[in-house]
Image (cartoon, rainbow, N blue to C red; front, side, top):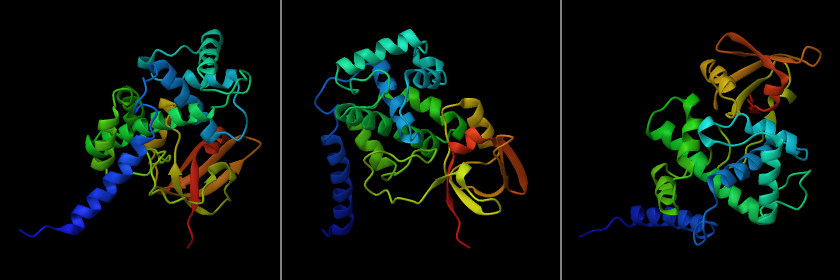
Length: 258
């Protein structure tokens, strides 16, 4: 019987990549963190991913207000402060409760949480066919239930994706090709761009972006960026769309070379 060595070799190569990721997982041989601790690490990772400045306790508390209600995360300063002290004690944050920063161990744990979350985003959109505007909340429900074995199969089932449903990089995806990106707020008027990623945390904003077609891969033209009025206007599908400069700051795009 003739065996197709090419297909077997490719499959083994892909499996090796998935196995390598999982072998380094803090959950491969250790007890998992609580759901609340996982969500705090995930939130701090997201803030560090999108913010050039240090993250304060107040900023984290504000960010947690957008977390799905099902997560039962406290967003009052006392409850956030108590959890931060616990994460510092467990060695997952550097010992500075004013400027929040993941330790080496905390970053490793956060990356595996983020990867499960973004794989779950791709699962509910690419395989289950849910609308993009529901992917973030559904992924929050699924991320805690994904074991290393399920994670490995998801990576294979989704053909080793490099980004989540909203365009953010999946940690550990070695096929990811870096793209030169910039914030929408820093673009040039009249130039054309392709959307690389959009912020999914604020559900009302996410619904607005998705229903206006402002999703990863969409082509847009910059109409106006007003520093005085604090709003950005772009054109997509012959329609002008306006939103705050804060939103524009959190949308990443790449230039389209004509």
